Length: 352
Image 1: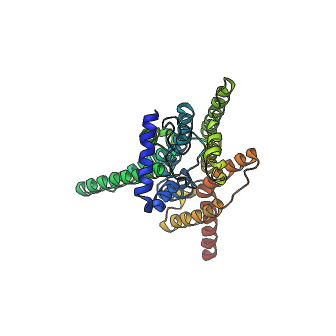
Image 2 (image 1 turned 90 degrees about the vertical axis):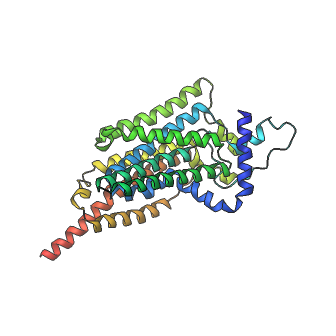
Image 3 (image 1 turned 180 degrees about the vertical axis):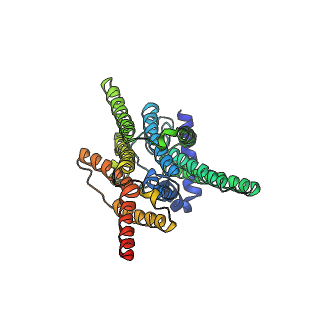
C-alpha cells in the first residue's frame, strides 16, 4: 500500500504545483459535492418538479453515506495529509511538501471518498431522471441520443473535477476517489430499483432510520470492546493538521451519520404530517411550484446560517440531527402548506 500511497502523493503534488491557479475551482467542487448541497438546494427543486426523483435523491444520499461510513471503518484508509508524516516509505528523506487547505483536515478514514461517492450517486439519479423525462415527452430519437451522450459526458466531467479536487486538497488518494465513484453509482442503481421508497409509510421511515443508526453505533461499540478504536483518525487529524481550527467536529463520522438520519427522518415526517395532506398534488400550477422552490431556498439559506457550539458533543449531534430534519420539513410541508393557506385566503377574498 505504501507504493500506491506514494503514487497518490506524487499526483497530489503534481496537481498542487501545475494547477494551483484552479484552487478556487477545486475548492468549489469539493464544497458543492458535499451532500449538504443535495439536502439544502437540490432537493427543494426536484421535490416541487418531480417528486419521485427527489425521494430517490434523499434515499440514495442517505444509504450511500451510511454505507460509506461503514466501509471507511472497515477499510481504515489513510489520508495523504497525515500519511506523508507518519510513513517510513521515504526513509530519512524529507516528507513531500503537501499543501493543506481549510477543507483538507477531515477526521474520518479516507477510503472510499465520501464526496466522490455522494456526487456520483446524486448525479446518476439526476441524469437518469432527465433522460426519463425526455422519453416521457417523446423526444425525437436523434435529439434523445444527443441529450443522452451530453448528460453522461457532463456527469463524467463533473465527477472528474470532484475527484481531482479531493486529491488536490490532499484529503484523498486517487484509488479512494475511484472506489467512491464506483460504489456511489452501484448504490444509486440499487436503491433506485426499490419501488417501496416512493410510498414508504412513517413507520418504515422510523424503522430504517433506527436500524441504520443503531447498526452504526452498535458496530462502533462492538469493535471498541475488542480493542479497535474506530476514531483513531481523529488523533491523526489533530496532530498533523497545520491549523487546529480546520479540524471540525462536523466532519466526524458520527456528525455525518446523525445529519443523514435527521434528513431521512425529516423527509418521512414531512410526507406524513397532517399539514402535508397532498398540498403538492392539489396545487400543480407552475407559479405555485416556483413559489415553493424560491421560498424554500430562502428559508434553507437562513437555516444554513444557524451554527452551534461544538464544545458539548452530545448537544452538537442532537442539534445537527434536528437541523437536518427541519430542512426537509421546510421543503416538503411547511412552505407548501403556508402557500396553500395564502392562496386559499386570497381566493376566498376575491369570491366574496
